[in-house]
Length: 189
Image (cartoon, rainbow, N blue to C red):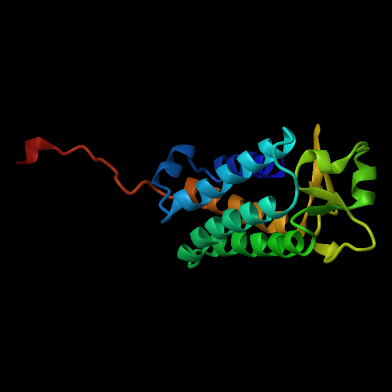
């Protein structure tokens, strides 16, 4: 949810700064299909987990390795862009905490309590509650947020990813289109 909120905020800021949403059509990054494939794989994995077809273990570890490899390939081939670099830092921070904790993102107990979450967190997919065995707690989902009616829990990595996404969208909205068609005054010829 945080990523959707950051996209909406970026679009609003883009319009305030006199940008245009249609300018995003000029968006040119190499290997965009790597990131699309990574997120598609993650979506499929979460659906299979929710249906009970998959369980957290070796299969989710392998899928996570493939998914994050695809995403990091996209980031690597576009690393010269400062906002892609920012997104990459966010993914690396999330990768560290996820792989250090049995391929689950730990969720802070206090953050969950602040949002009145009740229930088994592992039923939401690749999540676990922070406990005494959790590694890199400071990188886990421990930052609660509430933006209007929307609320959730984020990690430091998520914040980096959102900043990168927002930066890209705002910059792209403010760019002038490459192909500007001007009327040619034929009477001058």
